[in-house]
Amino acid sequence: MARKKEKTKGKQKKVKVIEKPLEVFSFREPQKGQNLIFKMAPVEKMKVVEYQRKPSTFHVMRLISSIEKVGFLVPLIGVERDGHYLILDGQHRLLAAQKLGLKELPVILVPEEIVQLMMNLNIEKELNIRERSYVSLRVYEDFLKNNPQMSETEPVISEAIEPIYFVTLGIGYENQERLRGKLFEGILKRCDFPLDEPLESAFKIRQERAQKILEANEIITEIAQKLKEMERWHPFVYQQIMSYVNPIKKKREPQDFDEVFEKLFVNLNEVRENPEIILKEEEIEGMEGEV
Image (cartoon, rainbow, N blue to C red; front, side, top):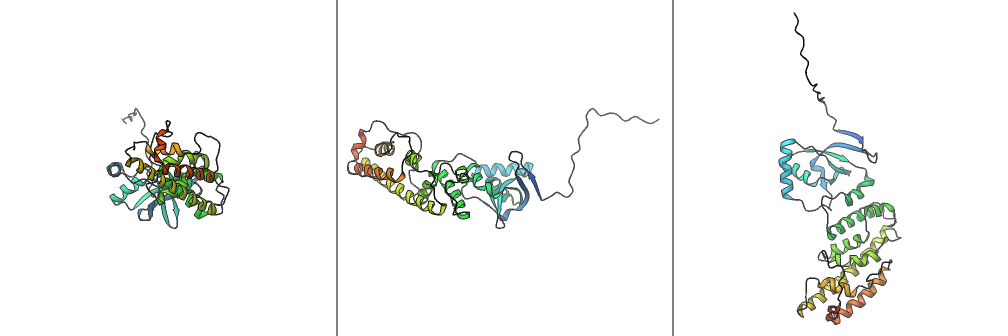
């Protein structure tokens, strides 16, 4: 007598094993419907974009432990250029893979036209003004290299770099790392806007503007030092100097950059001759935050 097969309470789904996995294939992402490419790429041909923060050793070690336990499951995101892979997202995962001696990694390759936007938006941690300025400058230089005749007012630039005065500050920081960029942000918000010029010529104007910011920064530092020698220094002395010399004050309407800085230098030179006059300033604007 044949035995009846016992019914199982639950049906188990079998996972289909792909004998020959594809190493390259395209797919469509769900939000924008863009065609992206998944690829297994050699680690030796990968490099991380310049703007990334200094990597965290602790984070890399945690990732090494995780990858050893479950494998490398999250693809990097990058763009292919000149036979190499510029990694936009995944710096720590790449470093962990290198320490583990992995030779290939999964990468999702994005279209060139969204690279600049990703460089500015897809950042692992919130950046301070110096770091944001460096990022903006790198994105701007990428636009400049690929399309020097593009107008700075093009929407694609404002989408990738916002606000544009970070480019000016980025140039300043490259020349003087100790620039107190935060001091000038209140002024730049009202006078440093996208220029109706090709990037090639607009960049030269921004270099000139950055030089003026550096000169103003040097005078402010000199004034602060004089107050220190007079034993009148305090933690917010730089903000107090800027509050006094700021020619815009609380005006909200757009201003002309050159006119603003011409007045700023007049005020700075006045304070340079008599630093004590700023101590009469009762209200200090922008005392919060970094300088």
